[in-house]
Length: 250
Image (cartoon, rainbow, N blue to C red; front, side, top):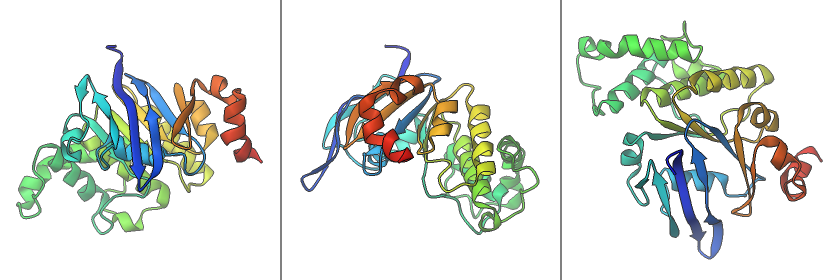
């Protein structure tokens, strides 16, 4: 199916007899914002780790753009255009916002160890880095060390570094976790802004974010797919209400 950019078949991961992800058959359509939701322990982050090869599956296959990427090294998966941002902000705290994005631009071009290069050579990345910072609402914070940024702005910086790798598909692991309302709104608008030309798969607990942002939703519980569809479809599913939505609003 040419409109499917990412597909898993029978994806399973076991840990010492405990099955964290069980026979997951996932299909993500090109251009969609697709959410994985479910209660704690449902297997969402483990699924992300499998998709990006940070964990090998016990069994099952993963295909990205019709290419079998099962067991492929994470760096090779990223070079194919499938890039993941982490639930815990993954930036260099004592580098400036500009320097963080600049390093990601260097890595995207295959230059991972440019710390020793001259400042003149590194400055060739500055214009693009500043544009990415502007895209995520961080214009004016170029020279601010990441450690001094607010939590919401750190997450925006992380998305900027992810965008620097020019991904065709982005995996966002709880991009609004721990945020105040204003920061949540900022990230939602940011995801909408960077969507054109990309596919986004996201783990997200905030159901209002999922409702307003996502085209399709996959509900996991106990490592299995419980339901799929748009928000209206899954939110009216009695099993979903019992397993997740009801618990969230209890």
